[in-house]
Length: 276
Ligand SMILES: Nc1ncnc2c1ncn2[C@@H]1O[C@H](COP(=O)(O)OP(=O)(O)OP(=O)(O)O)[C@@H](O)[C@H]1O
Ligand SMILES: [Mg+2]
Image (tube, rainbow, N blue to C red; front, side):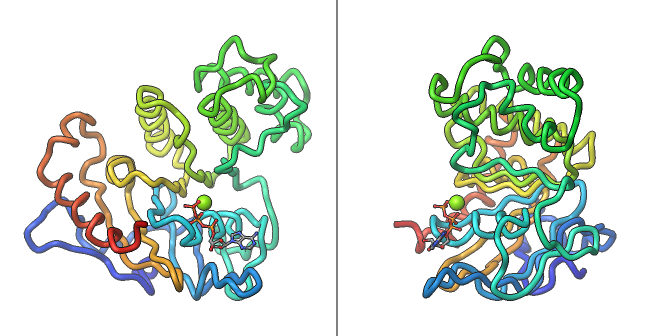
């Protein structure tokens, strides 16, 4: 039960699509404990606690400015919290580590390096030999549909393609925890669906833990084991929802099911007052 501490779990008496609130055997990979972050006067996060189950995908949904990127950066060890702490596998985070990979909202590619170098950069930092890292990078370049663009530079790519470079880079380092900050926002609808499928396959087959920021309620319901709804001012976790009963269902069937539409409506009801 510990991973639900400090949060409210939404359950519907009438709706089976909401999983029960007692996933007791959950193994926590990432634990956020009482984290606050101030940027000068701005309280971006206030006493936020949330646990992320291992081998599962948790989406963070919330209005712009509620602190989603801030939270991911703190978990990544790129930002220090003002108060509180992060534990990964029970060990306190004190900086970045090879157990975590980050896909940044603003791509964060090296502008002077081509696609191959950008994708293999994480492996380069880890001291993997050139030929080996290029083999690995090539696999993920192919996976994200960028074959043939190995020698292109970021300024020669579209926004969606740059995002795919960031995704390939994060996947190639084989981290256990993937921190994805709106990784598909600039990707077109067809590719987005393919990426959602690929991501679910990684969750299912490789037991990786995904922390996934999205603005799409539909996407969150479709891909998530759990959804944490964050509300701003002060930023807090308002609800944790487990829509996992959809897992493995064909996407078209999900989108047509009444349970799915109910969950989307409920999330929308929580968020609508905060959307400008
Ligand atoms: N480096 C910074 N300096 C000062 N304030 C910041 C900084 N980074 C973020 N903030 C503020 O902290 C709050 C949370 O920002 P954050 O980027 O984490 O939100 P977000 O939920 O990721 O938003 P979005 O959905 O638009 O990406 C906002 O009020 C933002 O203005
Ligand atoms: Mg953000």
